[in-house]
Length: 472
Ligand code: GLN
Image (tube, rainbow, N blue to C red):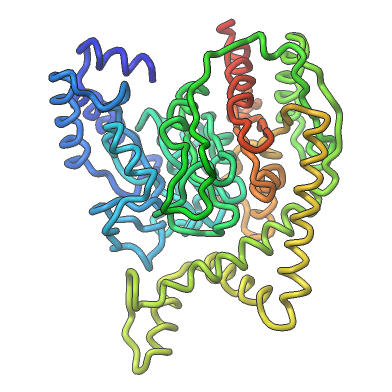
């Protein structure tokens, strides 16, 4: 992104030219990929024109003024429809911007459009979108991952230099891994959730997707910080892009949890991750074997909490307040028709499961138990930080799977095997491309850090990226 900023600053390229270039790429690849639900050509060009005016007068809002972006379509944009890839919100146009969108506009970033996702961010393949599946740019028969599959595919295909996603159980990191881009789920509370459509408010975070670690860090620096409009926002947690320093690798303690290298992990993924670990070791990092034994409960705990919170978050789509409404003889029939026709199968499944685990007589057995296990998982992570500065694992057990391959929802849920723990613990985690398998599909490695330790995580990621790309 520094290069684009330089080209803008030195007037070698205008924002209009940049936006036109990305719009042309969108035009060229969208038929195949279906990464975007909405393309706002007019709005993006208008914003670019304004950015160019500012550059001309030397009044640019930031070094990134005029560099465009794509947003996942569960992030509210004033005057631009925000569908959550659901029929129920197909025509919903928000009256206000999410705080993250306000931050992007303040820096002058034109919005190219809104990216496809699994309906209400529930899924791991973007197959559960009401707007069709997003295809993996590396293989037309495979998924881009999910739920931020559109954002990841758009970045990978060069439709946008960067994008925003959301991550509740892995939805930034898993598609980033499948599409060969960098994706960050920040520490819980470090980025505002105001105006981001809730899936599970105790787990949701917004984060950047970009082609390089530095670009992801730059976008994160725009997003991070306190927001009085979000009660769960952390205090005084801005982020500045650090000076990259290879010397930090020496003596860095990298935790390798054995539970993340066991059954179900594809050997080619394991090999690529181990190769990266070896690079770190050669550079003086200390590899510390450790155990995160509670990870076996992560998916069950996650699903209990995510469905419970989703059933409550989605109660507001009742035909009265938002989006689509199907009339009925009385209000109950209206609610039933609106929700029955508006929600897709996976969303209904989660609402039912969530209502069940919260119901009288089940609450203590399921929801309360899940909260207790969540505490154990947090404790487990906490003791890992006594031994390690960072933890490295694969992001996903396999590379991108085939469209239509995972018919059973339980199989789909297993996609979050290595990622959900970071959401349950509220810690930051980043997926970094670390090679390709024998089919030339990208492999992702996950770096996790303690709360608010994004900087250290970025340093390690930057270093590894450089080594892996042979730029050292
Ligand atoms: N795959 C997970 C799920 O289906 C993650 C979703 C997310 O992070 N938004 O719930």
